[in-house]
Image 1 (cartoon, helix red, strand yellow):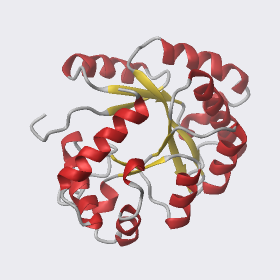
Image 2 (tube, one colour):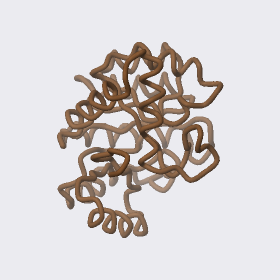
Image 3 (cartoon, one colour):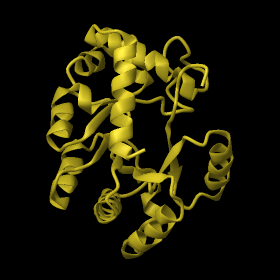
Image 4 (cartoon, one colour):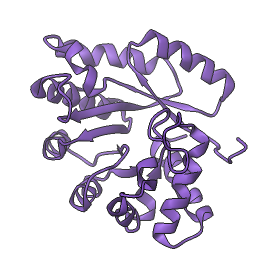
Length: 234
């Protein structure tokens, strides 16, 4: 609050009892916070062989709380080998279909899997509501995301000294598709790198994105708040 952060989206792993307990504490401390819930690609293998049951399970989880406003973090991660590619794809596709059914936006994780991510989203049909979370791709990936109707979100990585290409992309993303995040407790921005990340430090990401776009930080703060509220209907 002291940093001027009015609201946030907290990502929960569906079925994680510890995270559910922490979410309840957070609800009491910060009533304006909202949540996304989904099966992360790293956990996709827990649904191997029973993918057909996933939609019914996640539907129950998501609809139990009014403050769950998105399906996520979901997607594909080919950098790590926590789940077979075909299992990740099936779990992702079923969650995309559920988001369509429930008319909820997506929070999408995509690492070294752009082509398959775009293919699954296109196969679902219609415009995609959602955000490409913690964007680290190239200009082509950003353009593909925009063409699919996605927002693009920049994290503390954009503040790192070697992230010139990310800052260049942040300079031309349309203002109405721009979001920022911390990905707390990970990826603390400079000058806090190496420490546990905090939601308040999203202001540092705002400052760097504003610098890349040659505007005042207040302009970016207002834009991302407006985009956040519009995308997640909060």
